[in-house]
Length: 433
Image (cartoon, rainbow, N blue to C red; front, side, top):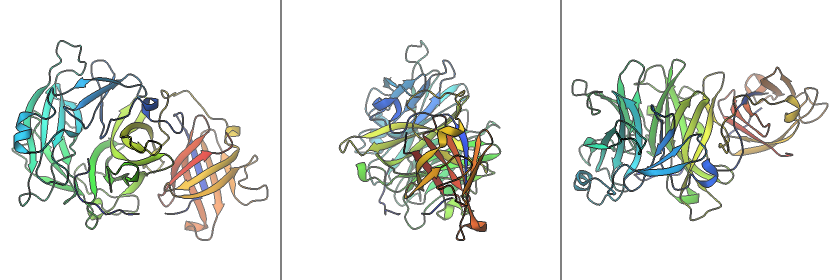
């Protein structure tokens, strides 16, 4: 949730392409084919009891939406009957709704953290509510509010206490990351028994900041294959179709950092590698969470639809895919449940593709039969071994004189996503579908 002042900021080129099959569907629809409208700052979790997915978002009393398949969503009430709890209204006068919740399950309960603030203010609080279950029809369904967990105030803290991101590590330790603008993203230890900062370990870690622009917020942490990944959002969240929000990432061997991007830049010094940015009809994608499921990982975020100039922020869910070097990329938004059995045939790749670098620089790439690219006599080649397509395009300006892109191809053969050897995001859309 954007809560400060920002400067707008503003890549590259591409070329050998490695394409791996991934499971997705569709190109240009929001989650739930529009049923995800009005769901900003989504925090997602899968129920321990029934396996359904629940998304909590910014709004009066914290709206809740539920899905069986990550595509079709239904509203299932709110956490609080009032727009803001009484304690929060007293602590932060002028607060009218609750921002940017996040949720995790530990110590036998669901722990929901939420933000109380007003736009542009550093007087903010993060609150905590718990529940044994998530299904409102259960006899055990009851939210208990535990009040303030963390606070910030002008002249007293160098951070802003909003955008909580709770992370339960495999060793049982619990951490809470948070922060927006000011001195960036911070993290503290949480006592599993209370869900609040650990009184015997008061260390506070700095995870990421932007020393010049300051426009950083919406932290989210996951672990995968020996690394911790820190997702953040850069730039302007809430400017409608003019929003410049974008999702960035870094990783670390330790949950407390240091987090670095693909080029080795520390996130505490402004580093971060692009994951998702505005493109086609979608503007300002950001404030993501991540859900890791048996069907794969998924990036859950909000975005504006440029076709709805007065529309709000839409929920979008995209398969989160991983390069061989262990870096994430976000494919096209889901429009139907993922299909783990779907496969792409080599012939489905033949034809012209709109090929973009970092969602900006655009060119046309033609995939031809017999391992050629662009034209029959070209030195640009591709090979396919069943799930990996490698394209080699010699270029004296490229590292080692050849561009190499490693991409994942949609099972329907209509899109691909990945990175080149310089770490830039490469995205392709088939033109002659």
